[in-house]
Length: 287
Image 1 (cartoon, rainbow, N blue to C red):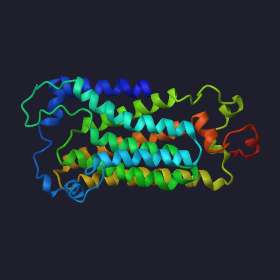
Image 2: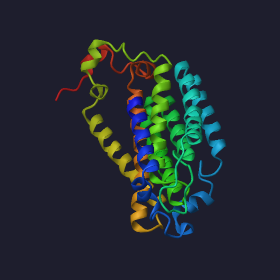
Image 3: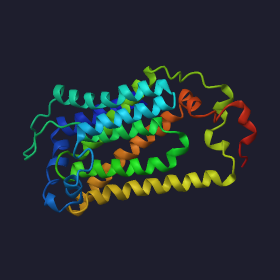
Image 4: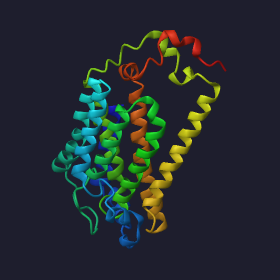
């Protein structure tokens, strides 16, 4: 998963930065509106992290994730988020220093800004917090962090700081760093019991209505994040609002998907609770 995300990250860079077609798609029309009329500008003026206090956001967010992991005595998770969260931010800054953006089209914006460092901050902090919180908190915390990610990332685009590809690239880079660091943190992905391979964790629900509730909450979270992205981009031209809002929502949903996949890794599952041990086989819901 990390290698795939890394490959897509480079593919976006090659197309949107090194080709005239890619540059034209984003630079030809994106800022032909009044930035001050957008909700994203209002959010920045009212200090939505990390639109403001970006360094404080990464420091406080990393420390909070580490403290939660240590308090739960999950030492590998603590090391994981302590390395991956600032590591993703440093990787975004390092990439921009090494990889250039040649001026191939006539545009007022020729900045080297792939990927968005501010977007990496919000996505990495949200991913770290979702990784370390108890599983029972996820259904309540995930929508809140998802809305935060969508508001921040869509705002970053609509106020003119970054292009849509730079937000999606930030999500792909965050996924790459977190998955590679997680694998290096000795999560032992290969030792899931054979019996658990045939029993999805969702099938161990104690009540027939649990799976339906989870489905509705998942759908509601997706809708809430999409709405948040479009709200943050509101005030720009209609197609700009649609593009910027969609980019923010997609980046947020990709990050959430990353977290849910990683939380299903065997070592993480064992630390959060024995949800698919052989002893729980009788609780499988039959259809």
